[in-house]
Length: 454
Image 1 (cartoon, rainbow, N blue to C red):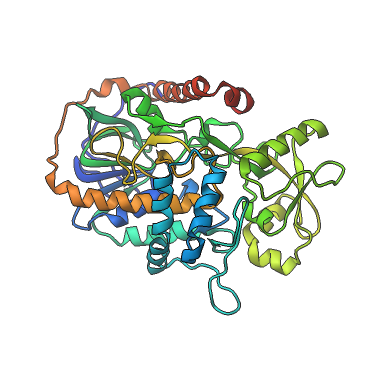
Image 2 (image 1 turned 120 degrees about the vertical axis):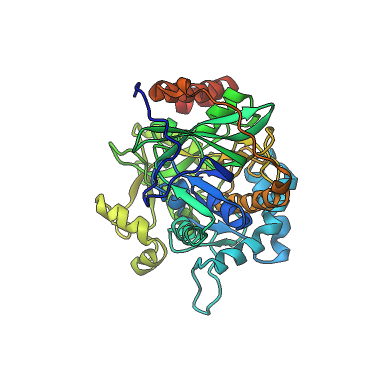
């Protein structure tokens, strides 16, 4: 797309709202981390939220299994140990403790915002478990927990008059001078319009890197833009090569995004089978262990998938617990209640990212990172199932707190920006993708050869 772009001072969103030149806060991304950060910032501050695609097309929307919580104080040590063990003890324990301690308050806020979690027959919350969890501590809304939470948060954001939402608005660059962030350069893909937006604080909530992989459960437009800009501006990254491959995506040919078969399916007793119908792994081991077992079994079997069976569950229970998964599988020709389904590993989640503290602060002043974009050390080398939504919400809220507390001391600055270097957007994007892939290769050639170089 090498051409001249308009450089008007404003960009319309779908509702005709115009992007201003200045905001108190710019939040890049509209998943649960970005939305919760916006709701946690004082309503007296003007906030711009931008989405690279449709507002709802975030990976948060796709999360199926559920969200972990500390359901009783006695479970704290076990929850901590499960998270550390899954992360191969490379986690930052202080961050994990912050996440667990804040989880009950986060659940209360979600419920206040209208989120509905499944209840048991007695009217109490129905908890489930997933791989590497020692007990039942995961709340869920059928098998579309991320959709439920994202929708309810978005509804609340739309009610805030201080928040402007713009979709199809892409962050091209960060405006950084003297190790301080002063805003963003954005491009409106619909109107091909470049714009500089200055802000007192910027929050990166752009998700992970799934769009860089041939096989991923992520949306294709999630291409790690924040990480490329971090590499361009010497913003500290941490563990960018710690990339989780989910064991079980539905094996389909010629699909852009792999359909995730939730960890909860195995948590509820689903078993993995080789081509001879034999079980070959403990399905509740950590994801990386199960993934490697599947990869080896596929090599032995000589086919690009193994089989997953949940035929032990009554059909009405499958329909109650996994309606979305059941419906999708049926659409492509598999009845979960009667037959096994083919599954294969796919890139799913990034444990590393922009290095951040427990308030989302990065190595650059006035720049925050939350959600999958951030690496605060909670996940270590491997994420414990259903910790992602919780981690995103806890640290997004804390970022909102600190922004509200400190922004009164910040004066907006407007360093000049040369827009000429963004004229060839395609070249800029290609360079960004290569920066990330090269960094992964530099840090972990074995992972690169196994999962990236294909």
